[in-house]
Amino acid sequence: MIHTSDAAQKTSRDRALEVVRGYAHHDPAAVREALDGLYAGGSLEVYAILNGLLRSTISIMELTGRPWRLEDLVRRADEIAVSAPPHYEFAVAEATRAWARGDESAMRAASCRDLTGAVHITAVGVTVVGLAVWGRTGFLDVLAEFHEAAHHRRRAGLRHLRALITPRPLTLAGFVVDATCLRSRREPPPRAHMNSG
Image (tube, rainbow, N blue to C red):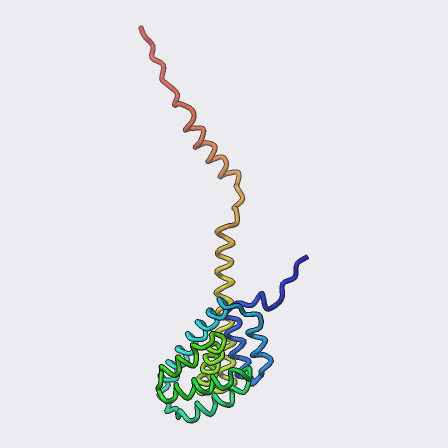
């Protein structure tokens, strides 16, 4: 029997949520485990998911209308980045400061050097903004709800797919109708006999 590891079973969405959750808990081991064994294509998917989460979270932050001090967000990013692998901690700090200055080219440069680095930078960004908007407990609840909704949608999709590909049993009534239709196509209609007289 072949056993697959838990890492092979994780979806990109799972990994994205786990790395953010690891950062929110200040847990370097969880951050590392969330991305262990991730291949380049998977990194790109995780990065895309995190980018969507970051844009959504920033939009929510802007909709609240509450004033956010950039210094507080940068300080929080520095605190959270400590959980990043050591070789990405500086890149996270550099990208965060570029974002705070509104320097998009420097921010892109910091995140474009390395795809895995971009994943960490974006995950820290999601975490910083999420914690600022909802606080730790609220943010973890939001992540749990997102995870549940995503898995519910995936399960519903799988049920629908199974229904499409599962052969339906042929009922006797269906068979009789089909046989009658086929027989009527093969047999010529009965002819009326004419009597000549």
